[in-house]
Image (cartoon, rainbow, N blue to C red; front, top):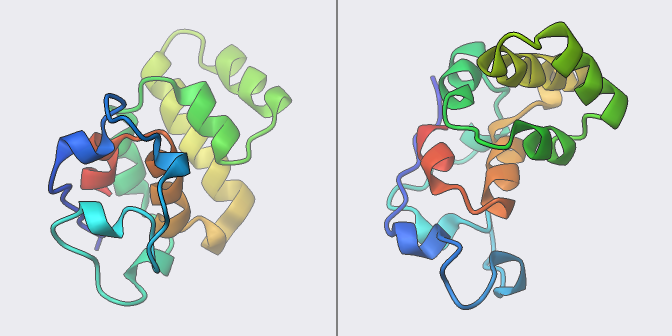
Length: 129
């Protein structure tokens, strides 16, 4: 199953906070650990993301090209996604996750995914992972 994380305070993840996430002192463990109400069991974050979870969160991704870059997809890979799915922004997002998962295989983990959305301060997506 997927890893369920619930942000205890959306303001902790909001861009309106005075100290950017990248400048906050990091606690031991996942950086967002102090901002969620339920920390997943040991090892759950290191499981490979399921297609269902990736499809579900695709709906909540606004700037998918930024996410794709943070996931390690190259500029040519991102251009290919746009040209192959020019008719559907939602399909571009799904293709981004499919390409990422195909590229990383079993290394496409919930931990890597949550780290990307933490950098983007997007608790709405973290909650769905």
